[in-house]
Image (cartoon, rainbow, N blue to C red; front, side, top):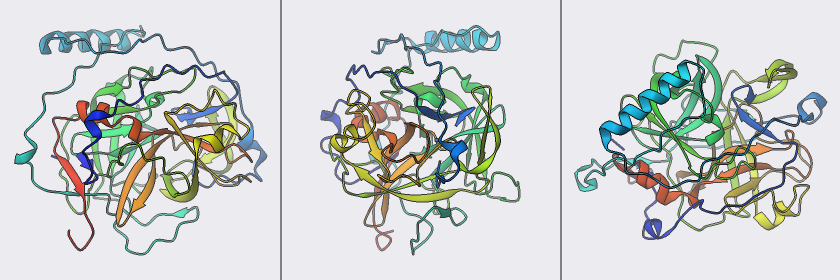
Length: 376
């Protein structure tokens, strides 16, 4: 069992993340989920990829907070929700109950955030096989639709918009995947999802608090081949640092279905990576986005001239920052206006705003800690 955290954890329990009720003005922006997929190395010479569509977002009516259901009552509510979903009746979601915490002193020590590659060359290229051993590919009814990040042996981090309106029992998580078009990778691991826990403050209108946890039906074994990413320290902005985004998102032009419309774009069959500069929220609010769109729960990364970005297909996947040898997941791919457009950076959910919430809902998993390759 294993959840990954940097060594400095003293402020985690004091930080209340993602509690703001920020209302952003609506605009034409794209998310990256099932049939609405965000990507690595989008080329702005491809005009079709920069076409935006006003999406039929709706305000989320949830008010947040947690109700202490008894365990059997929660199971009944989940069963009812699953039944209603299978019958095509939506709108009912039981309030999630945090798991009972385990004794961390009994956990076997484990590292986090170490790639399976010693030399880094990043520029919108294909990754090496299993270079990012925490990268998760999500499928819905066996079709690729989002990315995610393994945090421990039980939970995967993703975007809330990759779970809203989806039946969790139809979501599967594929780990140690590289080429999603082949089944020759014998080490690939697949797990079903028993619970999708989206943040209670998530708004589909503003995409604020766009973060969720997926609970796996079976634990995975953490080792040198399969390792979680590290969580970031609290409060740090990461402005001025270089981020690395990974995903199977759109890279070139061909027809795909997006929100019921035919759009020219094709997702990558292989996992790709891209370096993007992280900007301050003040810089992001001075871009072509309105000030009200970028909340404190968001993080922006991208080039002022555009040309390279996360995009459709990358949603829910990680934006990393490297600290020594360790990769921390500082952002979750969330939204943006078009893909790789000038003055429209990619927008990510800022992970360190949600550390107490993540810790609370993954308390039944062991924590891995950052360490160098020499310590490993």
